[in-house]
Length: 186
Image (cartoon, rainbow, N blue to C red; front, side):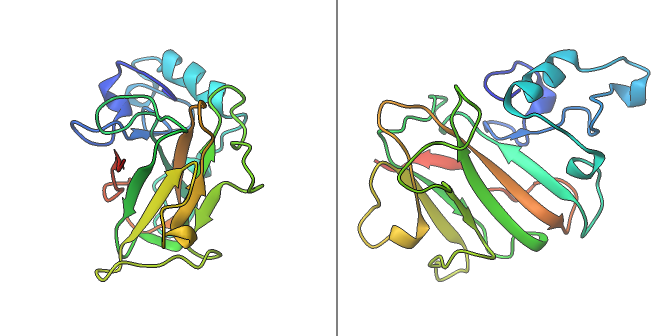
């Protein structure tokens, strides 16, 4: 599920490449609460990119735990390219009691992407980002910060792919129905 998957249940929205972390809605990847077996391919792909899981990462606990969404392709279906610039709009009033974060990863090592910043991420609680007039925040991903957008920029590496994971901590509504879309801006 971390990269390409034919499983429709993996995708958060129609005509989008945003994917859930847990197909089946639970940390055990059960189909129909276990009556239909397990989503074994989804479990295998999840553990390619992650090392642990816990019920708190998937249970619908309003105001508690966390929810995850990931994307590995741009809006045209192309793998995210570290030499290009992309923009992700995070809507105003993200449904997270605690905070949201976006961290980018290396698809080869599954560790955080090694850049000049030891933490290739943005966090609504810790980072001073510039908001748009409507309260939303545009995040930029690319090898160089767009002029005037340095506070909202996460560095990527030319000739290297990458992928982000959006996390909501203390989600205030089930699922990630309001996550933004990743589009290439240049």
